Image (cartoon, rainbow over all chains, first blue to last red; front, side):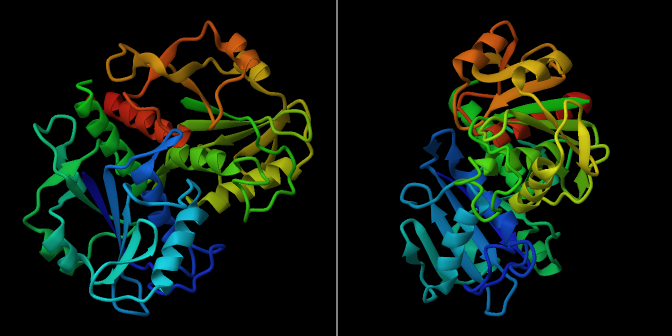
Length: 191
Length: 191
């Protein structure tokens, strides 16, 4: 099982955002949607052994975490609006301290990075980390930021975590996930 | 300069499609939009040395080719609607036998794969090809299909072209582009 955790620093916690303006009023929700896409989609298939955690930190509510689980997710298509629609339903769902399902394989709870790191051991994907191609082993959880850098508070939380890099150029979060999964696919196939 | 050519078998040639329904009525235009994204976007930067050709074969007009050029493209944001909006403007633009610009760095002309292969030498990205990681050299042009397989007519046109694979699993076209560019980035950086 491989998990990807993406922090949406400005992503709204409200389930009323417009699917027609995800980069704007929804706080770059488009980035999180593309991360959901790259976590799960294969050609004419879904990865069932991956999980995607979205941390929405853009208010107006306190932070929420939305979890997509490949093994059980339904109604997910590759386009941004499809993931956006499932996120919107999760945010409109009653939020508690425990993950509760809004649609099949999509759940929501209160809490952000500090709480998530208690549950999901993560390494940080960062351009200064160890190259994923040459690392002897890779972790089962990866943390990424959206278009903004990690905040000081986040940097404090992750200061002792291992760091991995996907290559010489700094990529978007969703592209980074694609490259990590390609490396994991190759390791699994001994290729 | 690296070129990616993506065939949209059902993608509309009409500039009247709705940005709210790109997977449906526009003939999986969302796939082509994501290929534009992955061809150009770096974190807080654009790749200026890449070109993306979209072949739209879904009618109602004869085939059109839309070209995005990284060196000159403007008004392109990472979300699907942004690329979709520029494609829509290109399709609404007067189409001739020569590329003419609809917005900065985006052009359109009549013609499909047969004509394009005269201008852009391509290799085919295909799960049965030579592994891009171990190939001694990589080509400057790559051809991909959307969610549909190449047609018999297309297979005839590309039968003698070299083939490359990005790994053991069959990926979406946009994810494939990401993995190819990561390999090219690494080769450029000797990493």
